[in-house]
Structure formats: C-alpha cells, structure tokens
Length: 368
Image (cartoon, rainbow, N blue to C red):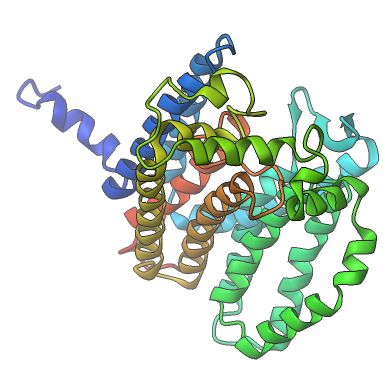
C-alpha cells in the first residue's frame, strides 16, 4: 500500500457512486423525518433507534444498487418481475391473514410481496419497451397494459388498495413516458369515469367507508372519521410558524392515530407550521426535478423510462400521503417518503434511489 495515498483518496472511489444533489436531498428529508419521529414517537420505546437502523439498511441497499450498472438491472428485470408475481400467487393461495387481509407470506421471514412490485413493475415495463424500441404500435401498449394489470389485480384481491394504486401508478408512468397517445389517455379517463358505478359496486365495505368518510368525516367522528378530523386539527393548529419542535399537543396527547407512520405529516405540520410545510414541499419538488434531470440525461430507453417512473412514484408517495392526511384524499395507507416509520418502505425507497444513482453514474455508457 502506498503510504502517500491519503484516506480521502482511498475512500473517494467508494463514495463517488452517489449522486451528490440526490443524496443531499435524501439526507435532508431523512434528518427532518428523524426529528419529527423523535417527537411523534415519544411514548414508543425504541422506535427512534429502529428507524435509524432502517435508514442505515436503506442507504446500504442504495449504495449496493448504485454500484451495479444499468445493464445488470436490465438483465434482472424479467426474473424479479416473475419472482414477485409468483410470490403474489403464493400469497393468494396460502398467505398469512392479518386484520382481515391476506398480504404476507412466510419464507423463513414474513414478507409482503406486493412491495417488490413497486420496483419490479417499472423495471419490467422499461425492459419491455427497450426491447421494442422503434417499433411501438398499439399492440405493444396493450401487452404492457396486461403486464401491469395482472399483479395489480392480485394486490387488489388481498385487499390492499394503497399498494395497488402505487404499483398501478409506477407502471402507468412507464407506459406514459414511452409515448402513450393523449387520445388514448382521454379514452381511458372517459372509460374510467363511465365505470365508476361498477368500480364502486366492487369495492370492499371498508374502502367505501373511506370514501364516504372523506366526503363527510363528521358522520363518524369517533370512528372512521377520527383519523382525518384529528390530523386536520393538528395541521390547522400549527398556524404559520408552528408550535415548535416537541411542543405539538395533538401528538403528545395521543390524539393523532398512526402518528409515527402514515400520519407523521400531521405531527410535522403542527410543530413546524405552514413555513415548515412549504419547505418540505420544496424538498420533494427538488427531488422531483433532480430525478427528472437524471431521466433526461439517461443514455437509453430503458434507463430513461426507469428513472422517470421511479422519480414520479416518489413524488406520488408524497402527494398521496399529504393529501390523505390533509383530508383531500381517502386514507389508503401510503407512507411519507424518508419520514414515515417503517423498514420495508425505506428499503424500497433506498432501492429506487440506488437505481437513479446507478443510471446517473453510468450515463456515459452506451447500452448494448
């Protein structure tokens, strides 16, 4: 070993896998999340330490994936999608039932296979369109729709509306970015609008209740509407400047349900106010901009579609979570990226971020 080589020179190649702006934004969001979780989880012993461990695992996953070239990701697209679909079929046949839903399976450890599809779906569809570059017809878009629909149907049957919507969105973004016609989009919109009575008739009772609760949460203030009522009270009570860190009364008096997971935004809004909300939205917008810049500079159809869809799904996470906590969208159980407590969601985010960094790092390589 050359004694003249500094420690920074030795470490630098291992750190250069990261995209600086993207890493900086993720660290800021994670830091804000840890501060908020510390306040929200004051009576949850060990939750702060668990989340810190989850973040370390997520960043480790991100680093490993960022090291892999996009060609490797492309080769893994079909196996990962097939494996995820096989697990969904296994869940439907003999999955574990918790709280009335069959979403998990024991493979030595208990996992939720639908989470795999959040990344497997854009990988598979990006691979599909790469293989058909320059020869896209309506048949290719129909096939891609079938590839998307099959796992979404299995996830809806579990039932898990929130994850199904996220997987559907992840796949739709790839199809849209591949060049889906606006006429087709308009047709899909009109068809969906006309199908609303059929969709409503096929919803589970709890899903209908969530929609009705969104329209009028005061109809069941101590039951189904409790989440939305308390979260909107917390957001409103924060005012412009907020009550200050560790001073949120709604959270500390335990009025906000799921305050460390799906409703952590309500805790943040109460303590940091409108100014804090605007700064948080700015961070997510900057994350969106950076991700789309990576997509725009990507060297191939596969990497461009993959980077664009992953970036948009991150923003969709944030939009849906803030919307449901604010009472403008139904409660569907979507975490706030890099802030909500939870290992599986963080690892999924780390995996997606690693893919973005891999694409940025290898942007000058020509896809074979």
